[in-house]
Length: 441
Image (cartoon, rainbow, N blue to C red; front, side, top):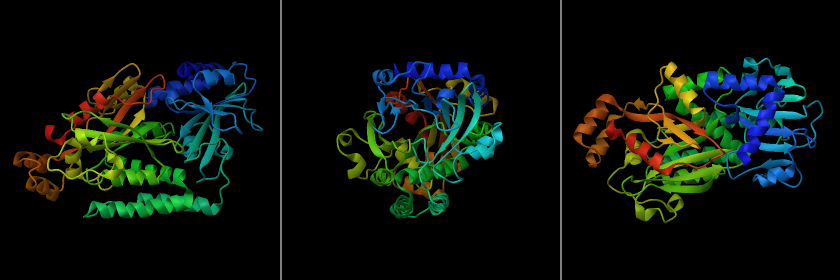
């Protein structure tokens, strides 16, 4: 019901403002994405002629954010917020807000005047109207850990502090002889940002740096990013960020994410044959989801493996071997993949035209479709290979292959969600983890 309600409202916008419809067509043709993948908020007047009332929102699972506002959210699925309120002075009565990474970049791609940008450079919320027709507007919104429609009261000192912490995250040292020292260093950098900016703003800055580092090591990511930047969008269609962890460091990874405001959501265990588990974490205020993978056995899933830690063991599964060869996702290796929301078929076809192949889908349901781009192969440090040989974790033949050809590293994941579905396909994820084991390449 919620999906139908949102779709009907977007249809109203496309009918009432033809430029919104045209924008949706450009999104599919130029970036392989859909309008719904970018929508942040639907803003309607209290007396909207389109007939949406608060009772309909309640029936569809939406709840008011607080008693003082008319902002409604639905946490049962992935849906834009809905606001029923009188327009701000000079604002359109109906406004469709879509997310971008940076409104300045957006203005260079659209016939929008930078002088119309609301919000100072570097602030937590900025917006610019890019189209208005018959009091129906399309508005680009840039958020950095801020959920409201009105920006926070920020001083110049706070804005400068955010810039300084962004630089600190980007320059964060990642290579350490002992992984625990790397996590300790990261904890200092993260805590300093949280103390100055709060968890949501710090979280937003941290993941911007993580995406940039991952993109520097993944060709498919750079191709897709360039397509989205042709429209001035950035990575604002991100769905979740995936980190791989060794068993030794998994509790440290979770601790770092909780410092950034994440809470543990669902967990996965795919069975003894698969040999892996995962903790899904969500930062609701900053709108981030993390999928954290780790080697795991059946008797460990019942415990609090995300906090109590996992004991070392001899053999390595897919995740453990990846970390042995490349390092921790949180440190040297960077993210295993970023998953963004797309028009599944359009994105795969567009990437193929730009020389990027995708693997066979590992999920193909009406409500969820998923596929990895072909893996980026990374060289492997000889010492990492020798350590794995000495520990009996890989064979001499596998070592020779890794020395000569490298090992599969990272991906971009193409995802399409329908009907607001926010979950994951455990069987499909297990399949793709098996298919991306470095020993199979």
